[in-house]
Image 1 (cartoon, one colour):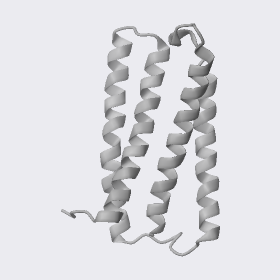
Image 2 (cartoon, helix red, strand yellow):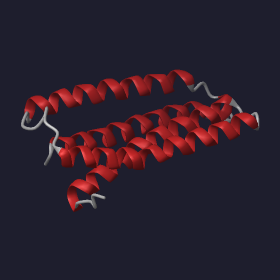
Image 3 (cartoon, rainbow, N blue to C red):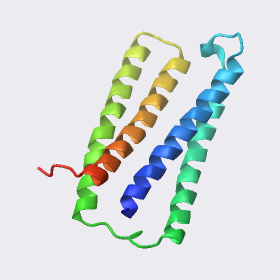
Image 4 (tube, rainbow, N blue to C red):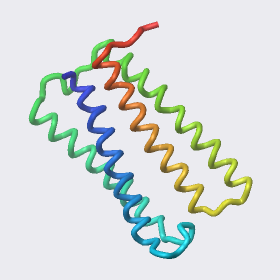
Length: 142
């Protein structure tokens, strides 16, 4: 398995884990209150920070355990990375447009922040899945 494919797996797993932890904390705090009234900023920031730290530590650990190719990227790796990034970035655009519309409609900050976070998470997961599929099944280089 190429090291860049391992990175895609790590990114997907860390992102899913972090977002699931965030959702569990916020939903757990909700109880009977409306979601928009649940304190969400602290868990959001903590899960993002934890995901960044976990991703870095996981990358270091995998680099130590299997160092072959950790610092090497060939043309195929660069093209697959670009393909995955382009596919994933579409969710960043969707999140930005959705957040803009929600802000213009004067929605609560809770919903705006959460749609942005969800779209960032979807961007990372979908981009990583696209990279994994490209490594596993090949891809059409235009």
